[in-house]
Length: 399
Image (cartoon, rainbow, N blue to C red; front, side, top):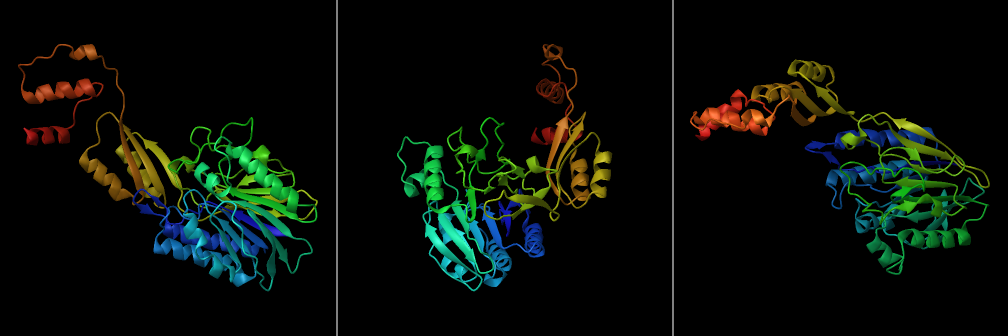
């Protein structure tokens, strides 16, 4: 059977003042098209469905419409769990209605899903943090251990761990107990989770820039070696770059976000993971690149002319722009730059450092006029840079 794994949609996300909703509509369409083209049997969405606890009407509508299309009106199951950006109660709320369309929404850790049956598949077994699916056209079941985002507070509430126990131990014991009970070799065994997971001995993976962090020190750092041996594929959410922190035989995959959401992701290609699975065999998967969405670009220039030339040649981008110059950027230059491009998110003027010795200003003539004194003061605070004409005009107005 074939399974599509995606995560970190962050519907409703903004980049500073720029809405990304139009791009999200396009990339959601693309994910639906990939699911249909690849003829996948099951879709997993591993958390951070929305960008905040109170998503807009537009983001909510896009979410439900996309899930309904992915489910083929109930023919294909879609399972979505909450992430650290989601309100668990908001995700859980429409579950009774969503199930009629083959959509399973899981907000809280260790949730137990009510069994149901549709024409093409049914939930044949459920337990806390576990479901088993049986398909009419398959002679084996699919078992899924599911763990939505679980901080220490939620784990205490839903998993009932002792105060001094670490998250790794809590999850290890719960996952292993569930896998030992339900996950034999006669089915496909999967784990889906929204956690900050790393491989022991490997460099610590960086969380996305500008995201709500999960890792505070090492308190919420989960190690991949606690995954039960029965699990053939682990579908993760949280980190926005595609990577397999497991092995070829037993992948542990961050599928990536569908769009670049911060400038630390500039230049990244985004993907979904399409898995081919059957019992008693290693899972194979391929990453399929997503093509929609504006590229995020970090550029540095040393002249206004070069800046404007590049901006006019690359209109369909979102930019973090650094402009290095020997003098401070004038108001008319700033205006000209913004008029040349509609996607400048940040404009960072950077005055080039010149050789300057504070001793040059160790003796200042206090008898000179106030404008000259201000220039000397400004130079002492800005590595010898002269204040530009605009700044001197403002100073004169203040006087």
